Length: 324
Image (cartoon, rainbow, N blue to C red; front, top):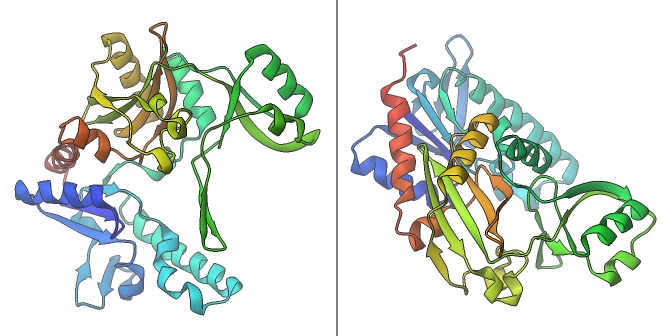
């Protein structure tokens, strides 16, 4: 059987679930808020989980686990306003131990994808992409203003981005998020001589961006003409300009598709959303992969039905699983 670990607000999982229903394939979905708060007891002799609704959860029933946006911190989201910070940290730690035990009870199953692989940082991504034959931007990680000055002098225009993933946080009823940003002269001049180690890259001039979704050994590609809008000219994920630009299905050259498949093998990933840039000179440049990235837009605008491919991938592994 297939186990879907997700969030109640995760619409991509909703659509994958629809396809599993369409094919009549057996599955169970557990959202972040529907496991730990509802556990009555755990039988350590046979690793059975007894839930408040009378359900008995047996991890051995599952051959395939699909994990998408199943975050430990969501287990206590409803109680945030009623618990002090230290107690909240303690409870989250306790909850994470229960969640880790539950995941360890599923170690026999095929995970799509393993969370350790899903946290592949930007530096590992660039190293593996280069090994795969993909072109990557010139990159510097530094905490030294003089080194950054030399890098800026060499490349004329540079950007900065987080090392792991884009982050967001709330402050005074406003939402702040990190995006790829150009290092301006004013920003550079105001930097201290030493700062927190940060990632910098050459700015890659683009004809257009490409979001590639890899699933079930297939590649689905959509061009984003994001440079048409100022807000998205540097990073198409900027919500102020999100998808006001033209999109178009694009077929990648066979050597790029082959390199992407090699990259996925080296990274140990079976799914992921990859960002490429197509330069005016015709060169494809690898930027990054988000193993749990958004793919609904590619599926919708490209008319690809990618959610069905995810369902087929899960069913394939479930049907070929060896009973334990």
